[in-house]
Length: 306
Ligand SMILES: Nc1ncnc2c1ncn2[C@@H]1O[C@H](COP(=O)(O)OP(=O)(O)OP(=O)(O)O)[C@@H](O)[C@H]1O
Image 1 (cartoon, rainbow, N blue to C red):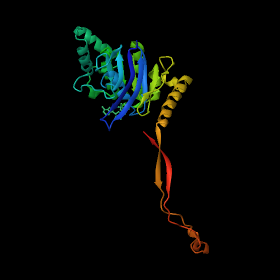
Image 2 (cartoon, rainbow, N blue to C red):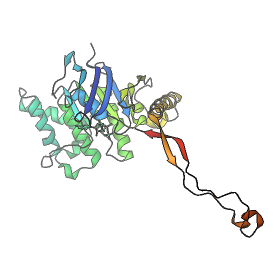
Image 3 (cartoon, protein in one colour):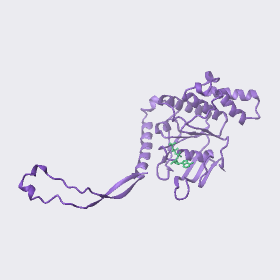
Image 4 (tube, rainbow, N blue to C red):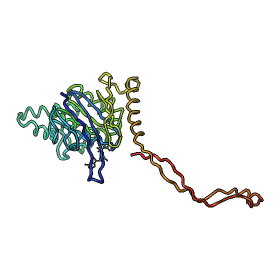
């Protein structure tokens, strides 16, 4: 049985008459230990999709399941990491993580909980900053705390909602590598959403494009058969990486261009005809046929992108 399964799910928002259908006929199956990345355009419905799994959003049609049971609300078995780190500003790194650990592992001893917190701070390479407050940390460090806090709750699946989008390119690259390394060591199931095809291929076992049809739906799964750990410098020259990247990007671009709908507009042409002013003082000018007033309509095809 897959750990996560979404069957024929659709979701829209708004009242009848002003409704926007965001997702349609979503089918997704994620096995335990898999690292799946869903990649799509901004605004295409990625967060809505991941929130079907987190339980923050309920499908209008279809079902989202974890271990075969319908997801009805958020739960500690699904750890969410967002783009904004949502740390408590008055607590240190250690205290922020302890808060979650104390809540989830109430039956553990104080020593067990402290060791668990310490292990996860070490895992994200923040031992030196354990007693710092969030405001004393860089964006990348804050996102590491957020990741450590979520991992420390031992979720069955880690749901990453564009976790690195707020970071600069270099920090983002470092964290991609670190998260991939952490995953190699603990193999927690990951569902990660991003708008960056390179990021998707770098970290994933399997990439699934979210096609920007209107409403959006998932495209074919693309298996990333590139050995781990992946070397980000070497991978740029890897023919497999280049092929996967080109394939993924063309699927997304094709879906985007198909989503352009053609519409026929009637354009009223301007009521003007050109004159040849070089002929003004000539016999030809006096005997010219135009300009005439006219009222002409022209049909023109225009493309509208949803
Ligand atoms: N709770 C809501 N109520 C109304 N509309 C919503 C709600 N949540 C999302 N939407 C709409 O659904 C569409 C998809 O939003 P969503 O946040 O899922 O996209 P996204 O791909 O994650 O976007 P981004 O990459 O910009 O974060 C948007 O048009 C958004 O306005």
